[in-house]
Image 1 (cartoon, rainbow, N blue to C red):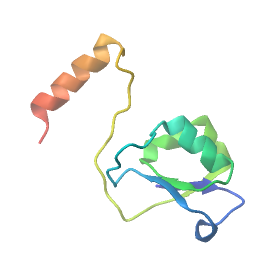
Image 2: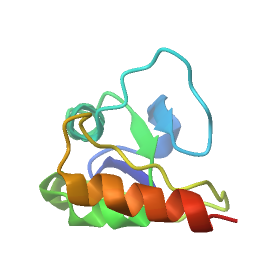
Image 3: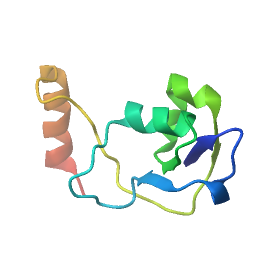
Image 4: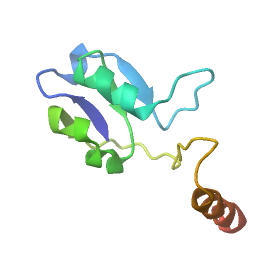
Length: 94
């Protein structure tokens, strides 16, 4: 989905982040990206479940024709349950 500020158009905003593109050396904190989007600094292409973010009430969204892999963001000290889930995904991923 493309997320952008309700009072702007996509034509007037630069692309800040696209989950279907692999970036090197970029800060990918989702909260920071959505905050920049709320401040009309640009737009982002993220998975649809971002609709659950509290920032999204200030944003508009439109579907894209792009598909991308699912990225999981978590702290290296994340709870063991997350590590267990990741282990299962690695074993059964296609």
